[in-house]
Length: 296
Image (cartoon, rainbow, N blue to C red; front, side, top):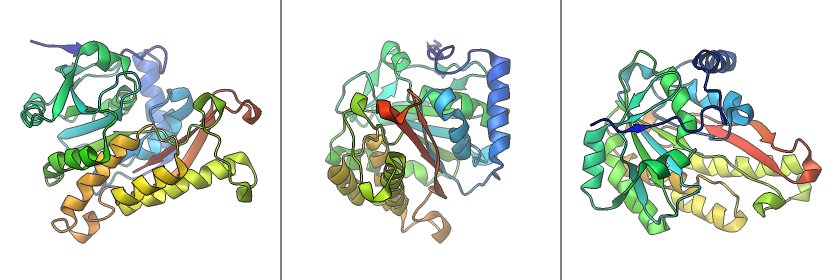
């Protein structure tokens, strides 16, 4: 029986007009001018509304070569539903305005059989935006290619359990047909987010934020979850996808001995760059900027 997860944020976080959405995505992908690479086995990309992050996200999704990929593991943080675990979707298909993405029910059952995952109902699934904001890009990039998705909502997972989930997912990296799409924004700065870290040595506030996020991305590129944890402890950077990123980083050490040198560390993080920043208020004095950084 088909169980559909609607594109619940279409019409608000991004357009629900199929023609306009396809044109926007095509335009952003063409503008970034990136070559598709079979070496890119995963991305870290933002999940804000497309008005703020759509153009930046193209620099992650534009690297994907869909020709040999048949399965996408989609990891996103939970913004509304509290769980100390990872939760699996109960849907059978994810809708987007430009094409549907079927769920890989076989892998969902494999993960469920470990006893370490919980299941999220459709209401929880549809309320969460972090994974949905990747779906239109994935539908566009994989247009004409048969692909299934494995959505995993990553809750407030403790460090030991991040490592455990990393070990459970590690075996899937061995298969070159598998791909990981990790959803995260980076620094959320200002009174609205109760975070105002500022290093005066960088002068302007946005330069301080950029330096903080670049530091985090450099650490992510190292592929070391312990160093990433130390960074978060020291600076408390408001990276909302810290748990999905940490789980993903715990996948990498399991494979540094089995992968070819080109696919060892940093595994799938083929390049890192600060692409864009956006903020809701348009005025730094309002202390409400959001900083969108992506990696691929």
